Length: 119
Image 1 (cartoon, helix red, strand yellow):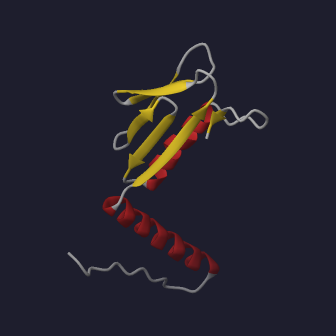
Image 2 (cartoon, one colour):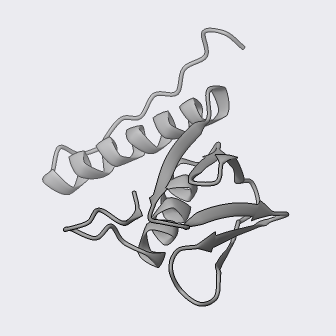
Image 3 (spheres, rainbow, N blue to C red):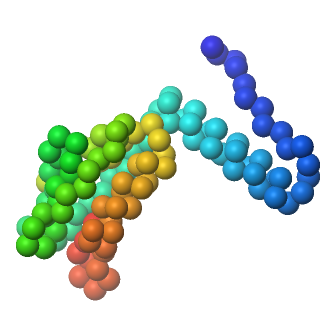
């Protein structure tokens, strides 16, 4: 398997063809890196009494609301909480890791003055 290559070439040299060529090359590169190394994002929760816990395929976050926020983890992504205020997401799909991290940040964005929120 070592030494195999995937070549992506554009048929035309128009602006749109060059843009699609670069995007296709980047997507293939992300797939190769995802399978060989994987992708990982670490998010921190800042706030007094705020925490997170993984319950099966669900992430439960207590971030200052009266009820915990529950985020369903898609198939193929794993979440680990090394401590109650840190969540580490990992998967082979770069887009999926970023999407779940964005959902977590959207639940409680970082507050500008006191710095509370998910970052």
